Length: 239
Image 1 (cartoon, rainbow, N blue to C red):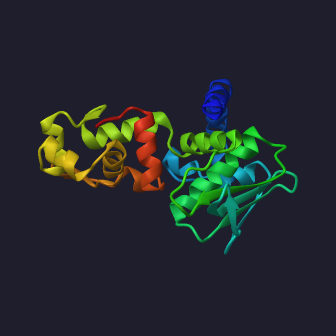
Image 2 (cartoon, rainbow, N blue to C red):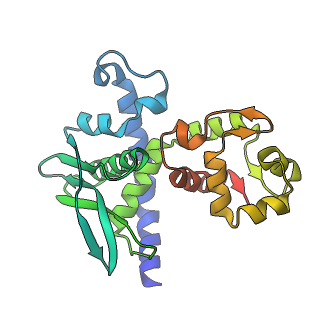
């Protein structure tokens, strides 16, 4: 309970400033896009917001390596997905994870670079076992930064409403259940037991009411899990 209270306090004190820092960085990357992309930037803002490009803009060298090693953290076996060294201005990313996770790791390290510039060397470790690990508040903040950098609220809301013709999906509405899955609300809840399972389905689905489209997780080049969490944070889904 003490740890939970401490993390909640940390969030209330820091996350507002983190959100502001994300917006400032996004605006800077966008305003310098022709310089950063050598005269040929992507057309969409979310594609310009590439964490590796932003890190290099801040003076960091980005390196992809085969492995950064495994560790035991509070008895849980974990593997390092990334490493930042604020002194040497380097970021390393492990190729042992899928590309969306590598990209989120880069955005996570970008969060450290912006919010914790004097951090020294630090790893982003991902548990390899199903067990709870108490997170350093700085790691929580870096994940918060990464999520908002890669999945800006206004863009996610817009792309969501274009796909689902609504500002919010309410599974209690039978019409929504049939448009999504061709089944009743009760049948969909039996298929996706729990809000997170349903959110993951929405994040990865490529169709609604007969219309086909690119899934939100694919569009933003993030994992299904990361997009599911973002949809829940924005209260776009009611299970």
